[in-house]
Amino acid sequence: MKGTFKGFRKVLFVLASVLVTAKADEHDHNYDEKEEVVLWMNTVGPYHNRQETYRYFSLPFCRGKKEAISHYHETLGENLQGVELEFSGLDIDYTVDVPQTKYCEVTVDEEKLRAFVYAVKNHYWYQMYIDDLPIWGIVGEVDDTAKPPTYYIWTHKKLEIGYNGPQIVDVNLTSDNKVQLAEGPISFTYQVIWKKSNIHFKGRFDKYLDPSFFQHRIHWFSIFNSFMMVIFLVGLVTMILLRTLRKDYARYSKDEDLDDMERDLGDEYGWKQVHGDVFRPATYPTLFSSLIGSGYHMMLVSLSVIMFTIWGHLYVDRGSILSTSIFVYAATAPVNGYFGGGLYSRMGGKQWIKQMVISAFLIPFTVCGMAFFINFIAIYYHASRAIPFGTMVSVSCICLFVILPLTLVGTIVGRAISGQPNFPCRVNAVPRPIPEKKWFMEPSIIVLLGGILPFGSIFIEMYFIFTSFWAYKIYYVFGFMLLVFVILIIVTVCVTIVCTYFLLNAEDYRWQWTSFLAAASTAFYVYLYSFYYFIFKTKMYGLFQTTFYFGYMGVFSIGLGIMCGTMGYAGTSAFVYKIYSTVKID
Ligand SMILES: *[C@@H]1O[C@H](CO)[C@@H](O)[C@H](O)[C@H]1NC(C)=O
Image (cartoon, rainbow, N blue to C red; front, side, top):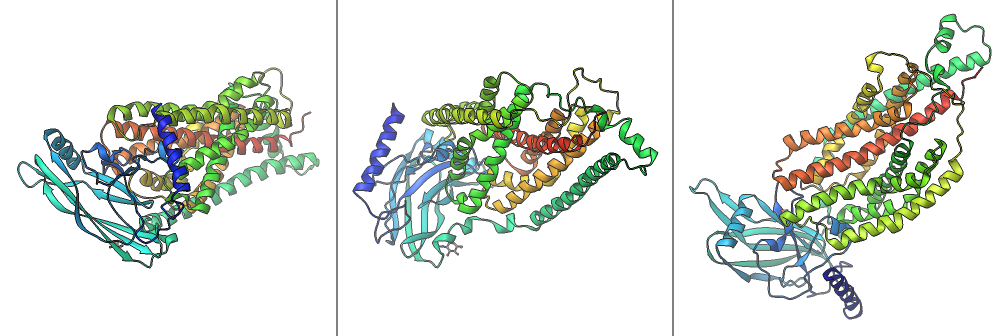
């Protein structure tokens, strides 16, 4: 009820601002002289736990006198990321300097004192926005040399705002006037200084980007390294393909020159022996085809979001990458149905509705399940990360009324177009027994080893991605990310093809799951790496942050695993079709 009311109020507010104040404001970033500029307070939280955030006013800070709309949510993505902007009440007008002015006073009692001391002790930072530019400031300072330690709070905010014509292009915050925390009144002051600046509006986010971190030599080196790996692996796969195929072509053309040893190799044992079994459907076809469908879907979403971000500089807008991802995910749901449903039908599955439902909800359920779980903890901690009920309802509605029907469409099309088995070899009625083989040819070992090289090609990028998500850095090198993504695809496909070739040569025909899992094990290594990162690269602490970290890392790894698994399976599948289509069955 309250949510509806808020929503209604927001609609009214938007309408009112369109009708009445049809003039410049923060939505188009153009200001007139003396026009109101809003300072929004966002969150406060421990510096080392970037994702553990609380409402700014959850600390007993006070507001300025000016009245305005108190809540302001714009997009689904912002809601999900715990952005909760509240008006600071500070009076700021465009290009009007404000001398040091007291804006409010807090009467600190025992309880408020405890809250402030706790915040200062845990290095709390707060975040504000002015015209969509983020501003960070520190709450206070501890003097550890004194016994007992004394706690100070910064009470003066000096805002230096750079403007270029009608636009705000730069903001600096200086905290000043340290006051020792004690019971009694504490007054807060602010000051605004406007400066002409030469920075262009388009480049105003550049100072938040950290080229010396992201374009460090390590980054280039890692790309180069992965690139060499790609060349090596592609060479290896080409060699295997050429070798097998050449032999076959030689045999078909009844080439008598083929020496005896080669003929023996090709015919008496090896991958050709299992031609009657390779196209036997995978075990658990429902789950398998759902995973593959979801994998294709996610691959498309990741690629499109990376492209959109490169193209539209989405990283400068709060929550817009997340909103875009959700939108693209929902809109491309037919892809999931097409690939999953088609594969299920080719494998002879009959319960296609069940398969479709599993396929449609596999990823949303994993993500929402984890989000739900973390939400409980967030609510317990009163963190601003708690996802509002209305947002949960809208996400569920998207799942039910957009993703499910679109997946259905995809499934029907997939079954119609690619639902007929078109295997180059017939499947024998009786499965062939799988011969004993060396321990390192067992699928479980192949699966474990398969992920090492793909992980090796991405782990440095993982470091950059993790750091931007868990520390105060804006990830903006999406070009790198795209390159690494492409390299990951190539490496994964090559590695799984090689793995599958060895497996089939050992006359083991269970290649579908093996190739999927061998590629997916990359994500297992990424998850292990996240433990290393947590322990050695961050200073996170506390139940909330730890659950949040490992929960979302788990979700990320599962997603990555399904995606890599699908790449591996897709590549291997093409390879298997190719080599068996040359087999002549006597
Ligand atoms: C903000 O700080 C930077 C670095 O100290 C400085 O170059 C810039 O001019 C400042 N901007 C404003 C508006 O004062």
